[in-house]
Image 1 (cartoon, rainbow, N blue to C red):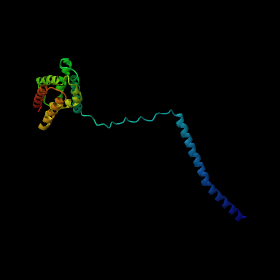
Image 2 (image 1 turned 60 degrees about the vertical axis):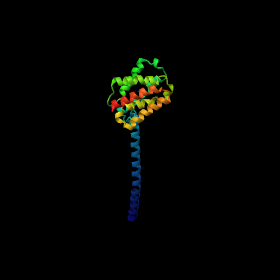
Image 3 (image 1 turned 30 degrees about the vertical axis):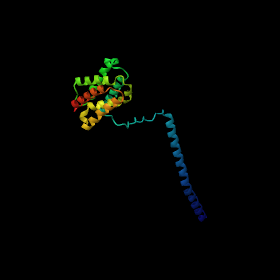
Image 4 (image 1 turned 180 degrees about the horizontal axis):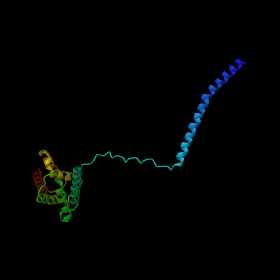
Length: 197
């Protein structure tokens, strides 16, 4: 009987050894499930907090240059001044509007500044030349840009200065300005060029 007991004991031990890994896996699965349930309950009991705010998006536009901004604003202002005069006669020009033009002309020079007398003469002749010439409205920005360039002639070569003055002359003549008025204005622009070199 001894051999039978030994065989039965051996079989029983083998069964226990085979069952043990299975029972251990079942117990491990139960523990993991219990932990997950406990975590889920804890999360449900906590007040919900919003996710952290995302940082504000960084602007991909490069920083603007203040000098460039001032130049563009001055060109725009000069163009607007010209537009205000082309639709009126010289007699209708308001002194306040003429003063605005004078201020914008004064602000145009970023380097050497021409005298106040030169600027005033240019403002007077510019108003006389463009007043009552509505076809010039399409050229207001170009004229504003050219006048601004002349006030900064130290940045231009002699050829560029000549080209800018010729462009002003061409624009004015093609859009109905009187030749005598244009010539006076061109003389003023050349004096401004000489003063700002």
